[in-house]
Amino acid sequence: MKSFAAIALKLFDHNQTDRYFLEPATIVLEMMHREARPLKARELAELCCMERKVVDSAIRHLREDGAVTSPKRGYWRVLE
Image (cartoon, rainbow, N blue to C red; front, top):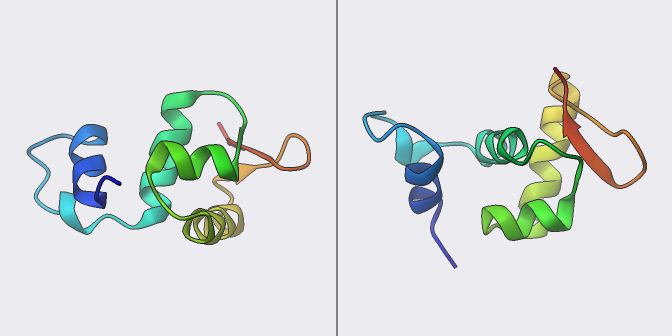
């Protein structure tokens, strides 16, 4: 599995100084932006190379912050 740092380098600007300290929710949100379609938590876990529990927790935090919504049961998308 890839590390968070490797994923962060692919997702974000290489000049970003704190790229190794990204929260899982930030990585999940960026991946959802890139995919631009509703995704299941399982799909996000595979795309982000994270455990499903970590992705579920990230989605819960993003939902509480109002950053994501569920268009249908089990799928998540970014709010615009």
